[in-house]
Image: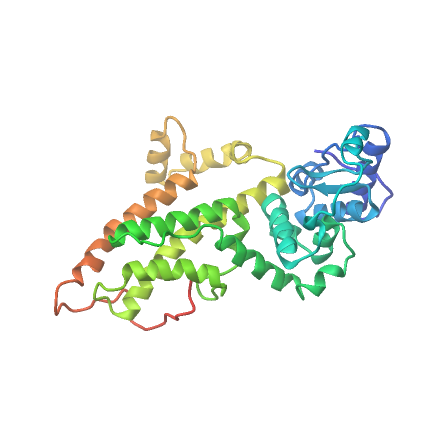
Length: 337
């Protein structure tokens, strides 16, 4: 793991800035070369993502590095002469005009690559190459920016106009669509809890789709909403670990396998202690080891939930049947996703 040199007591982010400056000055990084991302800096220097973000933001504000679409953050430098000859009088690029949409897209790219903690109004402005206060004309705070990001992300995958008639097929499509979005934007799962849900229109679109699949089966409102919340919690509950693992790898510098290998003696001690016989038997039977596959767990859990809920949902179709409730109190709120 790299440890940047610097004056005693110098803030860690400045030591990182000094080291990257040195690499540029010595020719290790040339104009156009990609510089380490926030996650790579966090892993290489053993610092928090926020510290890594501050280092990159400082370098951007100095003009030493710049963001380039579809490439990432690179060492700043003059455009190649050949490129200049091809476009001696380039027309104004509308992409360079600041707008709320462009701010949101840029912030989303940062969060996707470096995590939600890398988002700051100053950092987004630096990535866009505009004055630090310019973004505030379009969005008043980081909190509002994150809400715009979430709404745009949840709206990226629309549902078909003609919904499947079968409730289970519709639920499966809704759950897998949400899982796909969390896969693309892992930070989304960090934003809202079941008790304090994220209130953005495009997440409500997903909730409307799921509630529509459950409606019309004779379920009382509390049971219907309990099922909806249970299904949503399955998707979000697993998705939370996507960002957690990325953060852990960046902060420790260890992959999941490396982390587990480093704790093999502890695991072995638990197995051999005699205190957990069932655990020891199961682990001992895993001749090929065990890898936590979140995609496989999502599918396994979804199918198990729907199998178990079939009797509850389809049983309500019997005319005059009693309406069982998954919960004794009506705690659900229409504002939930």
